[in-house]
Amino acid sequence: MSSNEKVNQIMDQVRREIAMQNFRELIRQIEDKCFTKCITSPGTSLAEKEQGCLARCSDRYQDAWNVTSNVYMRRAQRQSGL
Image 1 (cartoon, rainbow, N blue to C red):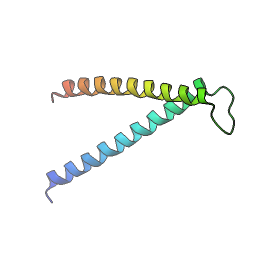
Image 2 (cartoon, rainbow, N blue to C red):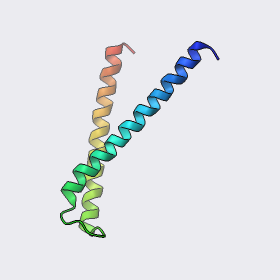
Image 3 (cartoon, rainbow, N blue to C red):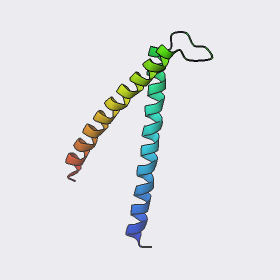
């Protein structure tokens, strides 16, 4: 394996780890923000209203996250000259 291939392998691993960390952060933020907004009285089960609220909240949060991530990636690519 050439040194160039090793570097590419390492870079791929770093990208995967960053993607996983970003995913974990997204889930953590959705749990924090949506739970606080939608669950008014925690219990052993979720009411239908709470389930709907959580679904809508997480969908909106993921959409916003995706838009923000895409804008960030385009800016980073422009700045790095790619």
